[in-house]
Length: 414
Image 1: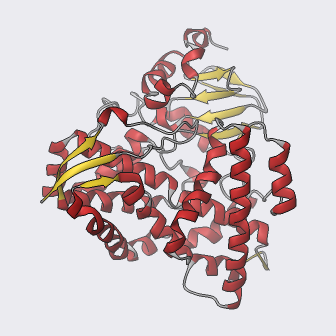
Image 2 (image 1 turned 90 degrees about the vertical axis):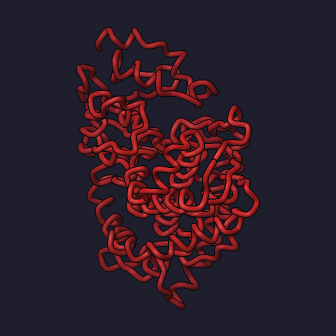
Image 3 (image 1 turned 120 degrees about the horizontal axis):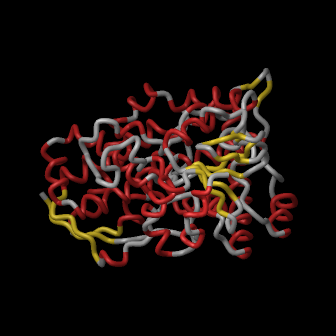
C-alpha cells in the first residue's frame, strides 16, 4: 500500500460531521491528490475518488460486484423480524444490487419503460406538471422549495407513469425516504425499524396494485411489469416488489435533490437566471452541470471478488468499496476548474452522476428532462430569486445521497 494513505486525515472522513456533510469537496480534493484509493478504517470501507479509477471499476462488474453493493451495515433483529414475518422477506437482487447474467434479464425488461423515445413523448406532459406547480405558488412570491416543487415534480411524474394516484404522493414520499435512508449508513436502530415498517406497508400496498393490473391492465409501467415474462415465466411478487422499490426511489429521490440544488444555484447567481431566461436552450447543459457539480448520488458501493490494484494500491478480495462519484465529478484530471459551476462546460455530460455501463441509471433520460424543464420554466417566469435565511441551507446526513433539507425562496414575477 502506498504511503500517501497516511497523509489523509481519517477524522475528515466522518460523514456524520455536519461540516463534512455540507461541503465534502475539499476533502475529496485532498484524497484525489494524496490518497486516491483510501481505506477509511472507522467507516469500514474503501473510497475510490478519481474519475478514471471510478469509471474503470464501474466497467469491471466481475471484480467490482454490485451483488452486495448496498449492504446497510448492522441490522437490528427487529428489522429482520418485520421483513420476514410481516413482509415478503429478503427481496431478490434484481437491478442495482445485481450482476450479470441475472441483472441483464431484469434490465432488458425495465429498459423498455425508459427509452429515449418514450421520454421525448413525455416532454409536453412534464411541462404541464411543472407549469401547474408554478401556477400554484407564483402569486405568493415565496416558495417552500422541497414541499411545493422539488418533491412533487418527479413524484407526480413517476406516480403517473407507474399508474398510481397523485393523491398518494405523501405516502410515496415517505416510502421512498424510508427505502433510501438505511443506505446512508447513519441511522439509529429506532429509525431503521421505522423504515422497515414503512417498507412493509409499501409492499402490501403494491401487492394489491399488482393484482388489480393483472386483472385490469392499463397503459402504465406496473401493467407492463406484471404482464411481461422472463424466461417464459411472469415475475414473482418479491421480484416485482424489488424492481418497483428501485423505480420509485430512482424515479424521484435524486431528481428532487438536483432540482433543489438548481434553485439554490439560481438564487446565488442572478445573472444565470437572466441567461437561461434569454437562452432557454442552455437549460439542457445547465442540468448536466448541476448533476456534475452537485452529484445527488455521492457514491455507490461495490464488493471486490478478487484482489485488485487501483492507482498503485491493492484492494483485497471481499472489500466494500465506495465509488465516490461526488469526487470523480470534480476531478481536475477530467474537468477544467472543476469547482466552478460553468453552464457552458463542453464535457459536463460526461459526469458519473448516473453511474455508467450496465448499471447506468435507468431513469437518467427522464431525470435530465425533468431538471432541464424545471430550470427552463422557473427562469421563464421568475426573477430576483433569493434564498430566505441562506445561512440555514443544509443537507440531510447520508453517506450516499446529497439531499437538501427544506428551504424557502422569495422572488418576483416576470
